[in-house]
Image (cartoon, rainbow, N blue to C red; front, side):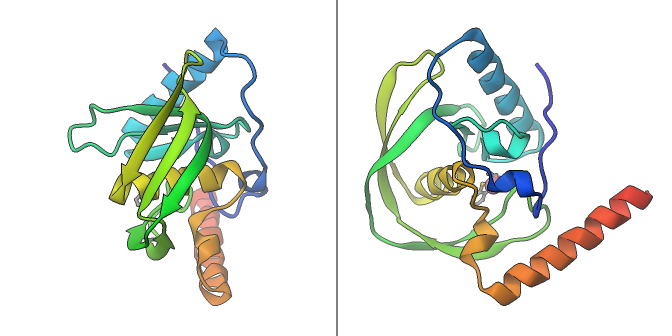
Amino acid sequence: MALLPILEYPDARLKRIASDVTEFTPAIKKLVDDMAHTMYEAPGIGLAATQVNVHKRVIVIDVSETKSDLKVLINPQIIMADGEIVGEEGCLSVPGYYDTVKRASHVVVKAHDASGNPFQLEATDLLAVCIQHEMDHLVGTVFVEHLSQLKQIRVKTRMKKRQREAERA
Ligand code: GNR
Ligand code: NI
């Protein structure tokens, strides 16, 4: 299993739109394994393929306390969303920055697993938030893009400074 490098905002590659997975090949299974490993190692509660510069509609999520409930969502589609939840979010592509975002509090999503089997998942609270955060990545949206323009400029400035410092180190 490989640890995959995670793109950091405002990298232009985070804006790419992911394509549907059309064939459930061993390469897709390897991508899912590598993404799960990368998510657990980070550590994070979700990871979208876009974040590891693979522009396919693949998400891994594990919001369990014990990190023992991996969910793999390929070609996910939200078929129902209702309610509202305002919660603090973070993102592995925006390390060190957290802010509140408004999301649907209850979603039903249909997706395929790594073998191509279709399933539906009903989610509330943190899992619902995480699904929406990850699905945003697949269409090129990072959570900070839900914040005010002023905050987006501040986050960009902070991230660019961080990246310059990392280059010097
Ligand atoms: O690890 C993560 N934590 C998190 C917390 C609140 C809302 C969403 C998330 S997802 C994030 C990992 C990540 O960046 N996924 O894209
Ligand atoms: Ni994220």
